[in-house]
Length: 274
Image 1 (cartoon, rainbow, N blue to C red):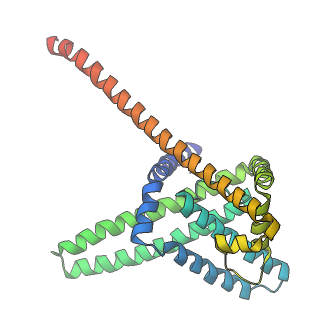
Image 2 (cartoon, rainbow, N blue to C red):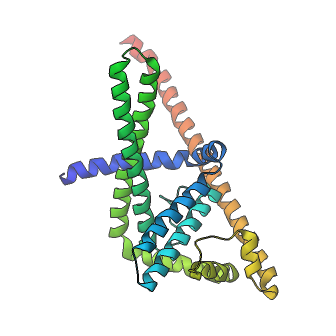
């Protein structure tokens, strides 16, 4: 593919990504309502994949790294569900290299789903040849085609994001170091608890907030609670800004539409006279 074709494809993927980011909050609301155990199932899938990787490796250091990355991925997913943000498009809780490894994992998830979609389409095509007048099969096929298209676009989008991040990795590493230093400075007790979690290679489990607090010494518990409150307040502020930004963009869009309508109405008599 030449540069012009690649740029055109990337622009389309950027539009698709913006669309996903616009609907991400609604998507999380639907997931939480329709599939309340979705996060738990994702974590179970991570455990299965991780245990499979551990059986193939003998080096202790490599095993520790795999366990650490699995726990980090779980932390990202929990952060994603708490903040209603798709972590595919919001860096956090990791370095760019670790974020790229998440994108690779996510790409594989969509690739597996795409294989299932293609298999389902083959079955639907076979059923259609047997029952040509069955409208239910037609409806199911339309939805299956939609799911197939979404999974394909998500795979291509992750390829684009991985390539983009790799190109900007040196700058992103500096940015991430600055953000991590700020986090350590503002939330030292929470940071210490997270490091304990990631450093424990005997289990893949991620503790709850109460478990985290129990890991803190008695003289640091007040500090830990203050840091948690500060984190929650910052998250609340972030969501408020996000809502304000959405409302602002909506008002700007409505204003532009009204201005356009006013121009059309002003010009309409002249058109009629021509």
